[in-house]
Length: 173
Image 1 (spheres, rainbow, N blue to C red):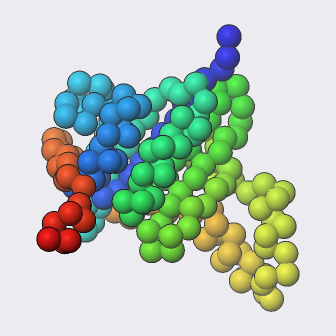
Image 2: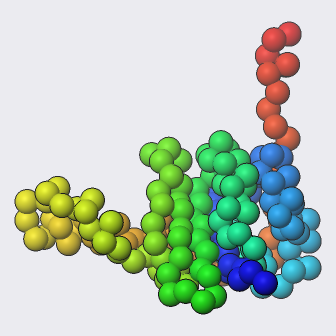
């Protein structure tokens, strides 16, 4: 019997979602049309800008590997995300985040609750990049900061709007 992973995916803005993103989320069992049907699987909050932030949690046999298609589709749709998994028998897991502003997906190590931690290989990245101790500390703090929006507020109920994909057929006519 294999160990499974506790996997968490947080994405924003969660509405409107492109149809391709919605399809990938449905494929992994996310009940987008009835979010209250799966307590503990889906929770939502609002950013201070009013964007809906969606947290999807559950057990996955292969962890983040099971979410590859979802993460790729989120990147193509310019949706921000943080995703991590923690094997139940291990202290640390892996995480990935994407910021549409930089168009770069970052990979890092996390504790079971998703809190980033530094590893020896991470420390090699800092070698020789900072001239002062203050600069090094600032670089480490930036590295350890999850790319989540600040000042999140609770949401009682929410609706996810799914937009059809844009087609180039209309533009060719």
